[in-house]
Amino acid sequence: MPPTDNEYKKQESELDELYRDIILDHYRNPRHRGHLEKPTTSKEGYNPLCGDEVTVELTVRDGVIEDVAYVGSGCSISQSSASMMADAVLGKPLKDVKHLIDTFTSVMRGSDDFDPDELGDLEALTGVRKFPVRVKCATLAWHTLDDAVEESPAS
Ligand code: ZN
Image (cartoon, rainbow, N blue to C red; front, side):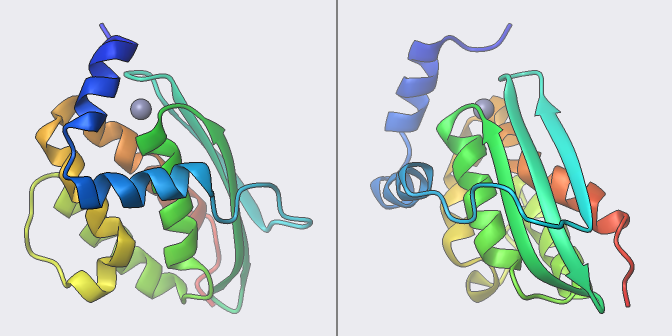
C-alpha cells in the first residue's frame, strides 16, 4: 500500500529545512523540463510504490551529454530529483555520469562515502533516507538515466 497523501506531506515537512528548500525549489522551478528536438536516446521509468513517472531524453555526442531533458509526473521528491539530475549531468562525459549515478544510488542506499562537491544540490536528497519508502522516488530519474546511458555510445 502506498502511503497516503497526508503521510507524504508529513514526511516532506519532516525533512531538514535546508534540504526541503532545495527540493521544493527544484520542484517549483524545474530545470531542463521538456523535450529535446533530436534526442539520441529516450527512456521511461516508473515507480509503482508512489506512482511517479519520469522520461529522460539525452543527446549524446562523442561520449558527452550535450543536452538533457525530462518530463514526468509524481511527488515532489521524484520530480525535483529529476531536475537536479539534469542539472548535474549536462555537459559531462558519460564516464563521469556513470560515476555520479553509482555514487548517488549508493548514498541513497545508506553510504556516507561521498564528496559534497560532487553531489552539490543532490545532497539535499540524502534527507529522504529516513523515509525508506521514498528512496525509490529519489532514485527513479537516476535508474532511468542509467538505462539511457547504457544505450549511448561511450565515444
Ligand atoms: Zn514519489
